[in-house]
Image 1 (cartoon, one colour):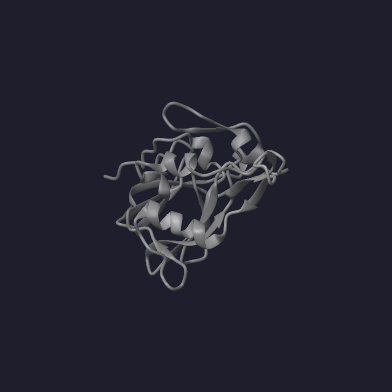
Image 2 (cartoon, rainbow, N blue to C red):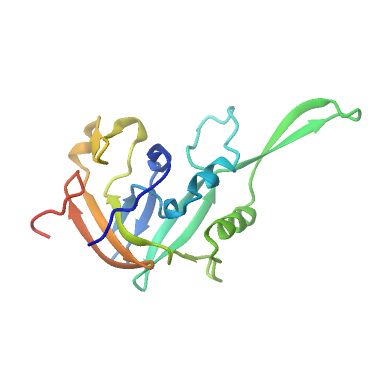
Length: 194
C-alpha cells in the first residue's frame, strides 16, 4: 500500500504545475511538486525573492521544473528560475536612488537547487529524483489556481469548464523509480477498470 505524498505548504504554490513526460511520450502535470517532499520546502520559497511588482506577469513559484522518466527513473530535466535579484542603487554620498532588478543566472539557481536537494546535476543537466517514495497525484490538464478549490480531504473541485476535460492519475514511485501510473477519479480513488 502506498501513501499519498504529504506536503507541508500551501497547495496554491504548486498549482502552476510541473510537467512530467513519460517514456512513452505521455504528458502529465504533478499536482504537488516532487520537491515538496523535503521538510524545508517552504524555505525554498521563502528564501527566494519574487519578481518585482512592476512585472506584468506575476509567477507564483520562484522556479519551474520539467520532469521526465528516463530508463524508468524520474529526473528533473529542466529548471527555469523565475527569481529576481534586487540591488539598491546609491549615489556617491550613499543615498538611496533606486532599485535594480535582474533575473537570477541559471547556474546560480542550479547551485541553489543542488544545495536544497543534496544532489548534483549530471553532465546532461539532469538531476535524479531518487528521494521520491509513494503515490503522487497527476492531472492530464494544467491546473488553473483561480478555478480550483481544495477540500479538507484533498479532493479538487473545479469552478470552470476544465472539469469536463480533466483526468486524474496516481503515479507510484520507489526511490525515484516509476512503478506504475493508474487512472483515478477526482477524489484519487483508483478506477475499477485499472
